[in-house]
Image (tube, rainbow, N blue to C red; front, side, top):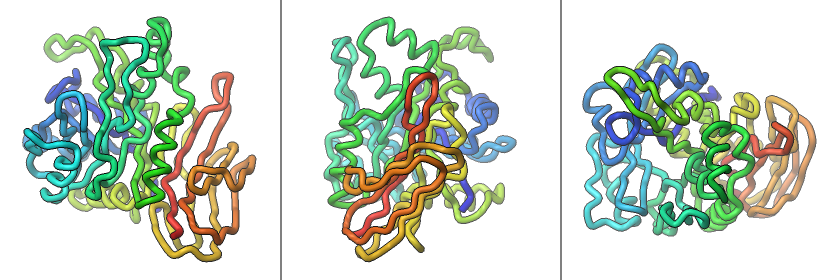
Length: 343
């Protein structure tokens, strides 16, 4: 498998970001990301203007954040035209994306708003039981971190030193995802909700907060493609989308340590696969030493310190892996796998 590091859920000048598509691609290259998955609000303008494609060593793919007011935002990919969400609830949006030939992920689905700041209400996704829901944004860099901030000082620390502010995904997100996966396959991705807040003056952004480059070093979704990119847009786009559709991907905080090379498999089954329960050997490999945890239905069944964890299992369940490393004075979540489903 060929591992590509993707930055997902971000906005350009075509909605409420401050960067052009070439500027965003340049920031991704400097942050050593391979793929940008652009999701401007309610528009595919970048695609219609022919800006999807390769920029040096960075592939830019254009999706859409379907964005009803205050809830049911959906990161949709594989579309040729934007989704008209007028009058649609969350389930209706999922169906509309599927009917248009696309697939998608509920954005910040477990959002509850800030308990400290009344003007920051939650933006949840209200149809997580919808059969057409493909997956969820399990860990949202800006949304999840900001909602947990208890003071202006904590918000300032997050803005100034974001890599120190994030440690683990919210427990409610993990519990909710585990519950969904017990019923059916639900692919998880990590997103940024990056805007590069600031003021643009002509071709420059002299004042910027949380630049694209800084955000792109944080939570990423690594996709495992069956082959290396060919630099032919249609082929490479389908490789990335196929990995996302099938769950052959994992979430990583590359600011903690480079995650490329992580693997989780069960004999001939890759991440995201579903098969009858049987005696199988689950194998995990990390590129650097970490505290590795194997979980079944959200509960730890094995653990190891180092670069590998191997466990024979035969009970039915949804098996996934977490990797934790010490960074900046405390243990942090480094990698979250997608599951292998043994039914």
